[in-house]
Amino acid sequence: MELHIDDHPLLDAVVFVTEFARPLGEIETPTRILELFALDAVAPVQRSDDIRAASRNILRHGGYKPTGRGKPASEYLVKASESGTLESINPAVDVLNAVSLHSGIPISVVDLNLASEPFRIGIAGDDASYVFNPSGQEIGLKGLLSLHDAQGPCANGVKDCQRTKTNAETTHTLSVIWGTNALDGYSRAVFDWYRDLLVECGATVNQVHTS
Image (cartoon, rainbow, N blue to C red; front, side, top):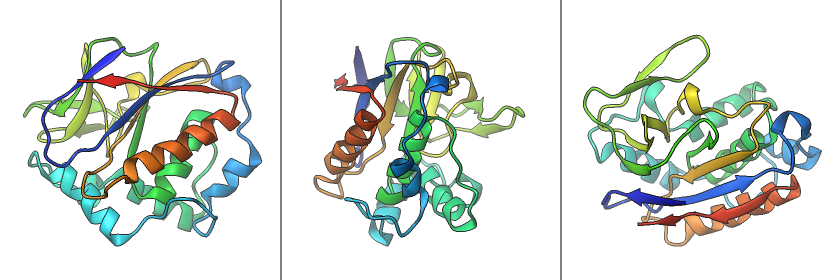
């Protein structure tokens, strides 16, 4: 698989494919990973105000306003952890949530069986939007850096598209760490930890060639 990334002065994305040994509905997330949902859990990466600001700057570059309900998903996870509402969904999402919570970097994951090549990362068009939850709510994507597949935008650092979200039958996923080059080497450190946690779930991880 190849993925094209449009020119972006701030983005340091890491993209990778994960193959799970069985459908996600048949895999139990290890307790150790679920314990990472606590804000005070020990992690090799640590969110900070500088990371929060840098993540917002990436989204601002295309004209999007990452505030209020449009803030990076990693910020929502902090609130969910504080309120005790961050709960297990499936191993793919649980690992993502743990890594995003502690790193402060927004991360996306899509079901590769529900998406189709070619893939591209770039700024969404003025009229772009998609449904992001089962109840049919939509997010406007104008100016928002997003992952696109053959059908259009399908994920970004704010809310991922409902049509390509993981489910109990998912076995292959594509993940994007929406890292920033303002934090030298940080995206790689986040990926290394992310990969290790997925391996604990019995998964195989391979980086995607980008151009």
